Every structure is written in C-alpha cells, then in structure tokens.
Length: 312
Image 1 (cartoon, one colour):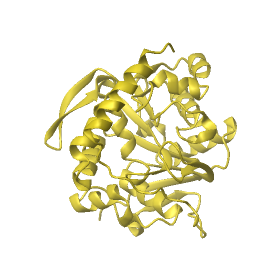
Image 2 (cartoon, rainbow, N blue to C red):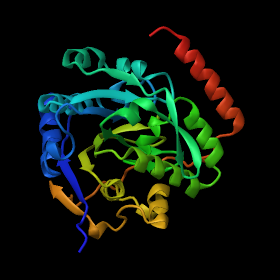
Image 3 (cartoon, one colour):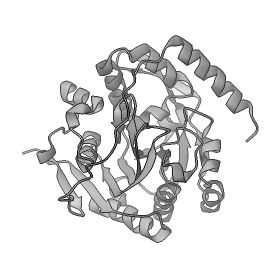
C-alpha cells in the first residue's frame, strides 16, 4: 500500500526570531529530521520568492525571518546554504536589500547569488535555460510565499522553481507557452521535477491576497506549510483558504498528467491540527491571461536592463 504524503502544518502567527526558529525546526522534525534532506557539507540553495524589491510589510517576498532561520539551522547542521533567485524585476541583491537581509546573511556567512548563467535542459519538449547555480547545488530547499496570482489564481509550492529560469526567459515562456494553460503549467511542473527540491516550506505566516503576486494585500494567515510532495502542499494551502482546488491550474494540470497527490483525504497532516474553521474571506485576484504579448516581453526586457544598470 502506497505511503501517504505528509504535509507539516506549524502554527506561527508572527515573525519574531525565536518563534520562527521554533516553527522551522519543527517543520524539519515533523518531516523526518534535517538529516533526511541534506548532508553535512552539502551546498544548499535556499530558493525564496524574490519577485521584486519590495519591503517585508508588503508580503510580496518570502519573509526574511523564514530565510534566516532556515539558513541558521542548515549552518548549525554543517551544510553550506546560499540564497539565490532570478527575480522578475531588479536582481537578487536589490531584493535582499529591500528586505534588510544583507547584513544578517553576511554575519551568518551565507552568500547571495543571482541565478544566472543558464544551461539548456530539455523540459516538456523544449530547451529551457536553467541557472547553473541551481543545477550545481547539492540540494535545494524551496521557500515560496503563500499568495494569490492574477494568472494562476494562487501559487504555493510549484511555481517558485520557475525563478531558476534565468533572467527574462521567464517572460519569454509566458509568451511561448502561455496561450495554453495546460502547456504552461506542465512546463512549471517539469521544471520543478528537474530541480527536485529536497523540501518545500511555504511562508503563510503573513500571506498575500487580492491582486498578487506583487501588488496584493498583506494579511495574517498564521501558518508554515511544508512537505516533499508539492501537489499535496498545494492542496493543503488551498483548503486553508477555502479555495476549490480544481480552480488552480497547477493542481488541475497535475491531475491530468498524473503528478503528485491531488486527493486531500490521501494526505497525512502532521504537526498542528488542521483548523476546523478555515479562512473564508481570502480575496482572489481578478484573472488576467497567462500569455504575455510580444510587446510586453520586449518592454519587460528593456525595463530590466535599465534596472540592472542602476548601482546597487
């Protein structure tokens, strides 16, 4: 009989250092201990959601406390974590600065890397440029933000790995694959499968609703959600906000291609009890097409060149 996927729920209502440290440590314990995911001296990419350089109160990016405490646990274990992303706007250093992370990461001895220098990998029948830094890491720990998304309803575990596609190639794939929801989501899933994060921990302490993924509203939710099976994590996140899972293109596509666990009753919840009363007033974004126009892609590339040309 197949083993049920485990999703760890830890209640965490604020970003105080000790509170988040305990909640992250508990995530590892509930899922089998840190040694299940990394070895001593492993190079570990911590992949947060750094989409644009906005401060922590906006809830646009993974909160610095989640990144710092995960890095601290890995350092204490003897691994070699580094923080990396390829943001849609600006670069990883601008995102780190906007969150006030730079000094703390320096003190911890945790480098920050732009996920650039793409290497072509055959994914879903096409060549996709994946950052060599992500491919070269011994392990990846996925640290997404719990938030709405105008094109994909909401994003939890899977889409965060799209940030390992270097630079403005992400905009290109929105143009090339975005005309077909299933093809675009299959591309996201296949990127996730290629990179195969050892663990996902979703920052839902303060989530984002409304017009995400950049301009929504920060709102308290109070959860960290973790696991090794991303669709099971997506299912649990959806249930926490009373969202019909079949409305999520990523879950719908995963069902169609037979990836992951898309049956809630087949998921084992570990840690804090799943709430009897879930959030019923989580505001979804007004949907817009997944596909970017060619003009949008060109404008986006020009804007990114200007942003990267500015001094850090």
